[in-house]
Length: 459
Ligand code: ARG
Image (cartoon, rainbow, N blue to C red):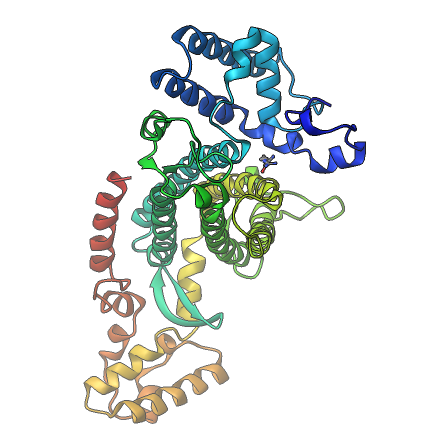
């Protein structure tokens, strides 16, 4: 049990206490960030004259050696150390002797761990942004391909009005664009360096906090040392943004599961993204979509855990905050996995245009347009609504669609109908007449696709 703080203790820590307290099993995930932070700290200590250049170089070389050995597998991070910070410092002293004992000058594990967590999550925000970007690119491509693929739009999961698949994908495009911008916002807000805040009240050394902030790519140093060591807002914000990403992926997954079902057959998932049944030979299941939907709970759980962990903590650092890691790491890995798989799944699925179009035709999705037709001929909307209601009832009884009715049948219900009703309620007309920005017509979708094309260039 190698501990950094044994001096004032007369007894060994109880083994159970040691295990309960230790974080090495999970904070080893940011070994690299820990050493990067230490390197910046050491460079700064030398620049302000606290370390000699020789000491600085010895420490930097030592840290680089440890990093290389960990990466190559030559040096294993083991549970004999309490946390990653102890592991690095103990190994450094083993390697370079007395100079290593100066690494922690003007630093506490409180500002160190605050820095490590920021460096780690900041890197992961960039990875998440990359994955959301790939999803946006695939959606953009699909929108371009399906600008004229008609399908029913739903409300209450009942067929409502005809739209196109491009329009449907476009809704998700907007959601994931917002997700992307949320990740950017979090990055900008969190990007201030806590190093130099010490345990809680800064240090008595003349540290150059601007320098370490700059070396580590931050916009500047944080402005309150108490807040710096106890702020985990950015973890909560990231978990919240990731929960929203999962909510979007989950809604989309649910639709794909429905569309891929035997009843709908709007899409067919690629064999590479489907699984079979151990007993039913005919089965091809959408397990990936179901898992993405299922894993959403896991990410929401991490958000709730973190909000709850933080809510009663007095200033400044308290050990509760060590609980910021495991669920957050798991949530990040989960969201990254879901984004990558989901993107692959929709990229490879095939769209059954015929089934979608047939479904739009069969479900009275043009009923609103039939009513609008009558309004165009001078019938008040409420009366038109009633007349079309009668048409629908008639069709349901005869098991036909509005397009299948003869003009005589139309005119029996209302003499206002003329030959041009067929044109007025065709799928093409229903979609093409909706041409305000944001609506599904070919021309408005082209406008949106052009805007998205420019937007994607800025990412
Ligand atoms: N493992 C600790 C954490 O993750 C590091 C900070 C320890 N600080 C302390 N005062 N005990 O929060």
